[in-house]
Length: 225
Image (cartoon, rainbow, N blue to C red; front, side):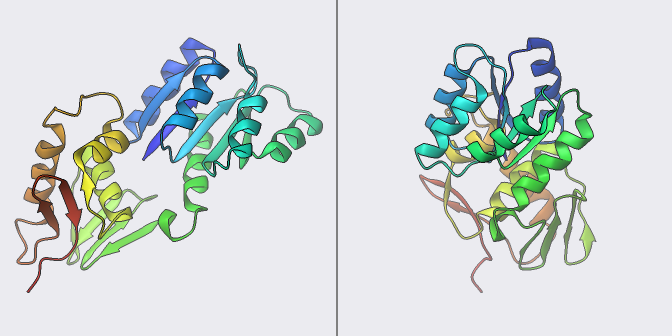
């Protein structure tokens, strides 16, 4: 899943972005409201973590503009102001949740996960395709009852495939959501990790779930009988 983190403190930005990446998220980050708005309006994100106190354009301005343009992205507002009025201002502007600084990373992570589950079926914690079952919050995957040991990136890739089961995904789409801007589209990183997943979740079983759509990308669906 892909997150945008807008924070003007470079040290905090680097630490939080790194920890989110370690949890399997693809993370874009920037340090001012103008760049934050450009990112949020020009790319597809699953969640935006937005600081209120930003240079060039405040977090509230970014939030209001995104909502006015019809954006429904999950937005978690970060604020160093703990008055009721400030929290109400953010929520009325369209924030889905808020978190007061300083915060514990575990609480930030829990709030991000909660926001991603609020979107309905697409955000379900339990994802299923045939006999493949993923519990997102528990970070577990089983197939036919067998536990599967996946790396962080393998898990993130499989989660994206499961949330879009039945849809053909291009390599660019997969790269955007799982690796963000870490690799160019001509990199073979997607193909490499698809192979890793197939070796673990398809190769030992008679029915294959990851299908190649030649010239386009991949789709998660059961192999025809």
